[in-house]
Image 1 (cartoon, rainbow, N blue to C red):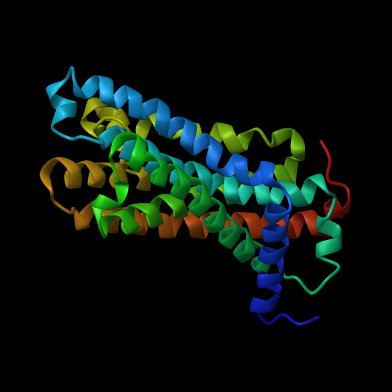
Image 2 (image 1 turned 90 degrees about the horizontal axis):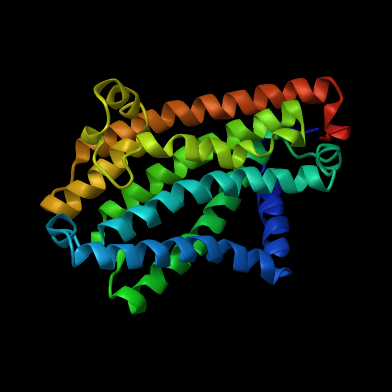
Length: 267
């Protein structure tokens, strides 16, 4: 069995999930549905506050931008974990690794699948915001790419860690895919600055890439200033977190294969 990295095997895994999406309109609808619902809800809240708050009036679209960027991280996490759960639901892990597929190729395919799902979901909601509210998140310009990339990578790290836990403890732990991502939401400063948090909690928040990204977003929207320092710090943290997540996932996978768990994954 070849240990050389194969882009063809990665592409085959990605293609398998693309076929799943293409053959099931409910799956495609689900990708767009939740980002669209959140965008509509917060859009109307934003419109109300804009007429009743000078703070929000100074930054039209800040809440819509925040919820769309938050959904990048949320969808990045689910894109990894749900794609992995698909293989567990169908009892397919054992079959996959009877093939030449390597564990790190599975990881790469999960990340690519997550990128596709996130782009479809968040992109659809962002386009819908234009006719409904006359607001385009694309007006953030190039900083938007940095925000998107950092939040997506953080979502990947959380998704891989959740997948590792589910691989180790079974599908009974799958609810962690939703619990883990929302656990970091209060300290990410999505809808408010980090300075609002208690002092001790601010120290925790600055260890999260997401808090740097949302502070950077507000700097662009309020002060028309791109805070490269915040994005660099977020990027460095993401390198660490993603590296740890990949290492943990591969280690747990190695243990699961050694114990024969790949053929006996259950609740």
